[in-house]
Image 1 (cartoon, rainbow, N blue to C red):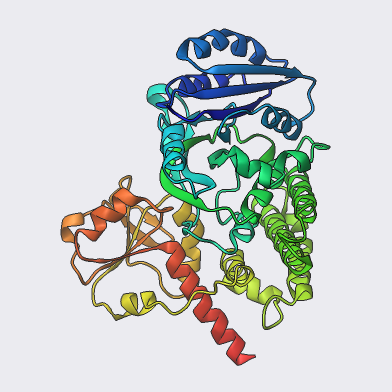
Image 2 (image 1 turned 60 degrees about the horizontal axis):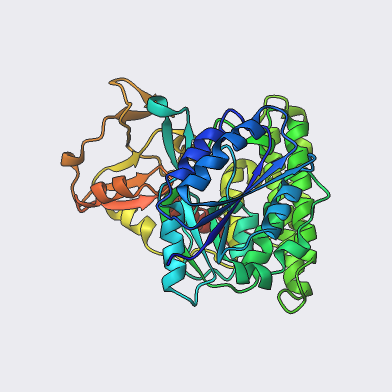
Length: 451
């Protein structure tokens, strides 16, 4: 018999999307599901859709619990739902996203067959539109290893997926982590810190599935994305405060004072980096740019994280992406070693090709130019005959032309199908993150030597 999976869903004013999420739940390949729907005072017809689907879920064989409460925010809704979960495993899903049909089954089957594991993590994709007009874009942050001593730091730095939706957890492990008891609900903001920080800090064993089982609706990113600097800064300020609360509530035998201090520093730096990016990228942020940059520099120098003083010139010369990657490596005690990637690229006689000309390429190609390692050409399936990106020619992919002398830098977030196709040629294939990490390490170490 299948183990019972409790699926908790906070629901608030998502009438436009919640039907699609419900359909994806009905399409799950797992039959023993307890669906807990917490209607957080919706006023747009969301409750009517819940009523419409309740009988469909029961006919499917699912247990259904519906809670109606006054609007209190996602934290309070999530806590109310988790408190009623009676399944062997627990997951939370968002009412405006969608699930792959195997979202539950792949992770639940693993936990069924591997009693020593406490939880599973899956990958995801972003999508916009619906039906035949739906557009899907791979979205995955850095790979997660089977053991990550600094997983919580990586979460705080958004180096791994910072959402609760990608976890399926044994109910007994949730109890061990005291997640429900310590859930902070005096806010209508994010509830990720109160769930993920204790989950990742209690030494649980996890399995990571590099599969896009969760589908994030990029058309409705909700309270975490704003077009105005002050509103976006407020989100990051509040998120940091929630992180600090969750960190301080960790038992001393799980995190001593030094580890808590390290985690708080990590959360502070993450907030500072994100606020600086807001000032740099949002249309009304320019007047805050110098102030946010100086606050970031003072914070990093005050903590004493780097073996030298960070300056405005260093940030301007290297760019915030490179600087933040190096700082992330320092915070997680994983400064990249010289792994030979740069030697492989610099030593070959063939072409250096970038693959992909989308948002990732637009963001990171200036860093490759700064490091004097721009691709000779960039391949993209949408490339026209005379297209260029940062003065680099854009070309249609030509896999048959590849030889072992060529090197390709994939300017996408871990796209396995393309990686496999490129490797068939015998060419050197790398992801942009690995190359930039090594370039940053090389350049920063040169800077340290000069100082």
